[in-house]
Amino acid sequence: MAVMTMRVEGSGALFSMLESLEKIAALDVRVVYPGHGKPFSDVKAAIEKNRKKISAYLDCRERIGDDLLKKIIVYTLLMERSVPEETFFRKLLGTHWFRETLDLYFGGGYDGKYCEIMEGFLKRGVVVRREGSLYTTVKP
Image (cartoon, helix red, strand yellow):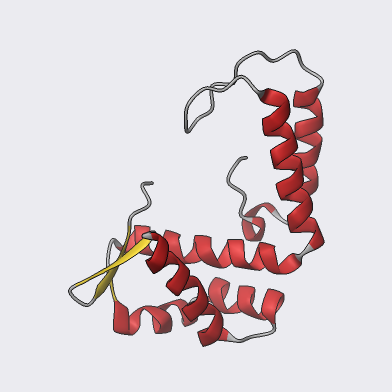
């Protein structure tokens, strides 16, 4: 599935992605060579997997909010390369997109949602702590 940032593409992005999947499903595709990852040949399974993922987003707006917040955090770390852990949350709150996304999808709850996402990232190794700073392991 393509990277989707609904704050950029708009709320119609999910519906556009479904339309694209329908067009692809109508084609006789034998092998897909994606921009990232290995080529694959089970196109029907990939299409169905993406339909389910899009449906899950449409059924639960908080999933969209979580996805957006995760991208904001990772993109910010990618742009900065490293951020002192003690100031990172304040830095995010100083941006309009972080605060607005929390307000739009969760009605606030800034520090709780930040801690929840960061805990998951640290546990999975998406973000690492080193000498008082945070780094992402995601490659651009």
